[in-house]
Length: 171
Image (cartoon, rainbow, N blue to C red; front, side, top):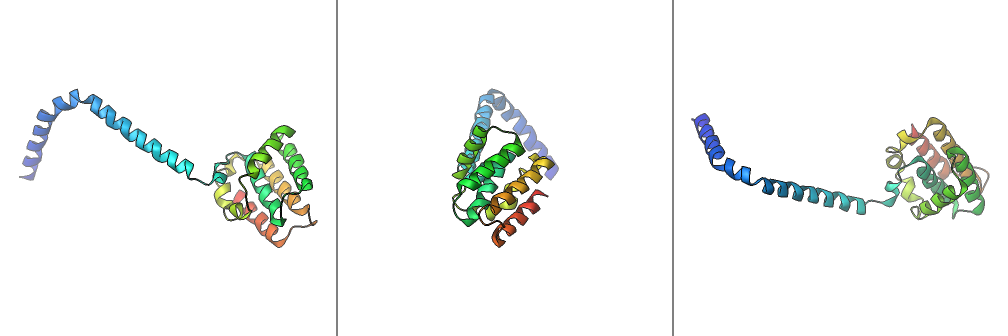
């Protein structure tokens, strides 16, 4: 009985609705367009409300993000730390002084305080980890250590923990 009712319903749907569907292709296109617009709007909403540090998408910018966090553990960025960061990053990534300086200045605004990066090390490194060459990873860790050691000659306990979490995130 149920099979018979399903068959009758299907025949009725095909006979009565097929002509409407053939003439209503514009309606289907409109529905598709509307759904695409809603999905795009949702995607834009997510991009607007995401933390800007998650918009960093290449190894060079990521390096400066973590270097700034390391340097700011002991207060503000000193001119000596900045010089070392720029010099070492230029060597490791083979970029011009202008590009390195411009990147550093743009990343400065993303790191108002170190806790923004410190709490999210693995989340920040996971998507970008595959873009690092092994040589760049080693250089990144070396620059990070050198930046931390500038002020006091050695890493503080807090900086050592941060460096260990970065090393784990790069594995």
